Length: 453
Ligand code: PHE
Ligand code: NA
Image: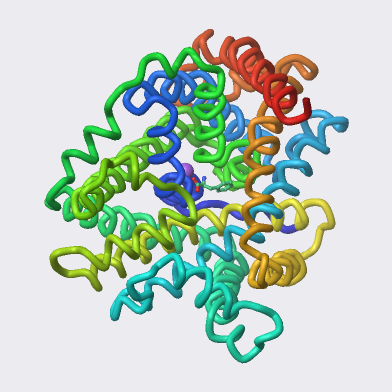
């Protein structure tokens, strides 16, 4: 039997896990989510969720992967035969996410090339919907080709080539290049943004605390949702990555580095995005609240508009912004895809090459759906359901099964403490068995009531 692949270095694992965590969620999701859910006051539920759910679950997933040495379904089934489905559920959600996450990276590639001559023109919204995405209509095959198809093929070719190259020679090397580069590019953009007139107004709007907001359950839902999505928890990803750790690896310390690293990047993105929005509001003579956006609208409508108006270096700054999205996106997409590729390899005992070809190939083909007219709406809907029901729900089931049905907390804790510098105390088990299930349980009931009644 083939021995399991392994990371070459500790830094390689940390960069790969951080690369998975740091993604589009940090750049275009966190700033608007924080702003809309209490601004400066959002940091209270956010930090609470990070410390009682995010990092404890990350430690749990690292431990499960490292201890049972398997992709999520295999690791869960080694823990207990009856738990294998939890791993498959996470892998399935990862598969679905990969089909649309890849499309957004493809757009960002296109937009990075448009940056140089501000090819999106004055009406950036019209350009996105009527020119760029419209070219993707199936009937107009001539237009279909240059717009989304080529960048999408590039995205999948790069990701699948990296996964084909394997854990050490592919995933690890890619992240060792992508993540440091991303941090440098992004720091440059944020510093530039802070020099813009109006930047401070943007920051004031962002950090202005609305303490009343944290009394609302929705704000807590938003905080937990952000933490789970942002840390790539409950998608079978972190378990797969940890399964490639050597026998003696520090788990707890690594989890803290990844957790705080991801949040630092998130904070940095919030500062950069709001400094830029403050500039835009100033130019338009309106309040910051009038220009706040998130998601596709922020990245592909508002940012191009802002880039048009920058006092200097428009093309370069635009390129660097979209290049950051591409790098952040790639390192996450690699991990999302590896989550189910590794599951297929373990389950069906086939070679990595075959699993990449068939598993990755299937997601690449499915991703073409979003490259059609109506694709954006479909993307929005899928993303909404994944975020509302997928993310936190799997997280809830995962902790309840591990802590209450399988009663694994003590075992896992002994395992982690045996190989880590930082020793887990009672807070860890308490977070997993009590705090997280209660908070997530209440959230889920609320969500179902809101959406179904
Ligand atoms: N954590 C990544 C982000 O913040 C996205 C992601 C989600 C990656 C789910 C893997 C799985 O964008
Ligand atoms: Na993230």
